[in-house]
Amino acid sequence: MLNNIDPERDIQFVMGPIDSLDHSSRLPNYGSKMGVDATRKWPAEGFKRPWPGVIRMSEDVRHRVDELWKRAGLG
Image 1 (cartoon, one colour):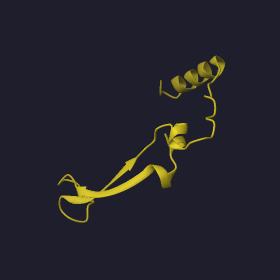
Image 2: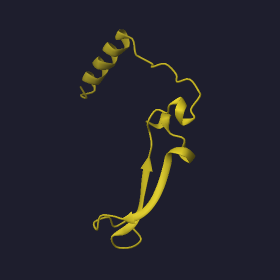
Image 3: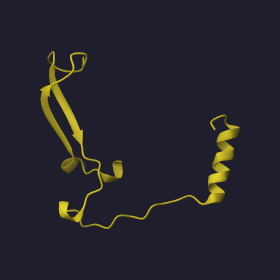
């Protein structure tokens, strides 16, 4: 997700009504919210750089990791 975010372009803050159980707000029932656009951007949105390829583990590495997780009690 974080690979797709440019903070200046993709994070937006707004003020408005919030849940009354949100005790972090500065006023009861009113505060700020943050929206994050973590989508992959298209050329039509002004993104011209090529995307890197997907990195995949080999089957050997996957099996080794699975075994290590089992030994650690995590799998």
